[in-house]
Length: 407
Image (cartoon, helix red, strand yellow):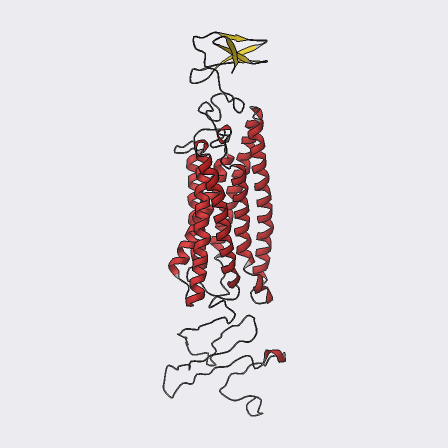
């Protein structure tokens, strides 16, 4: 080829682009080795980029017998106000800024309800407060991470680590919270059962396993990673997906049992509460399944090489929106109010197989020395804690003073 004049011996052979709009691309920068030298230095070069697109830097040498390596630093900077952020990450800076404001608005709503009805707050609502706080920390830390990266050109490992950790903790606590609610904690049962082999130990084990896998995936994917071609570790992705599936199956199984138990006890208000929660979870799971299918298709077809890299930021953004929407639904359903304790389990609730629950707002009648009157048919029950409960078709009445009071 050199003898025919189609190339220059010792120089790189490359194909010129077909499009005239590409200009003089690709840019070829050469480094020459002096006789007997084992190192060559590239001169500092500035390459102006006029078009938005995906650009790659490749190191090429022509002697296959050489064990060559390149050391140094490349600096990539946008000229349109995005600083040093890679093109596919630049929109996330504005997104996490908006999400920080959205979490602040949700926190303000929850704080106002919390302070207004603080006497009626139940333990379940304290857990929701923790999830909101973790969400605020996560999105704010991601915003600070991207802002520092855009300003300095170096991704801060410390900020990225804490953002990834906050996200892993928030996702773990959210899933455990929804599972506890589905199992009836605070609504059907007053306390969550513990014990070595009980439900408490199984929930704790699943939560710890999910946190460990999620933390490893997030740290490995984000901390120190600035490449547009980063691919998540397949093993960790499959592990997190399997643990997520375990949470989902357990949550819906527990929801089914809890709703059935509430129906059997004729607690209509609580049944409606759990039905709304089940509807919200079903929608969130359906959207998540559809979105993860799209994500797998996007990444498997090498979406970063085509023009689809422009919308790559939407993938993590939608996951954040799904999580935030589900949190908003839980906040609306379980917001502190003057009747919060109506949906809470009283001391007489007992566990799954113990005690005898009564309808919302009612309380068992403890018979003392005072007179008691009743009408129609009646039945007497003795609970495990030695309390006597009287029920009639028309109601139970206790005489207080000169009048009968329905109890």
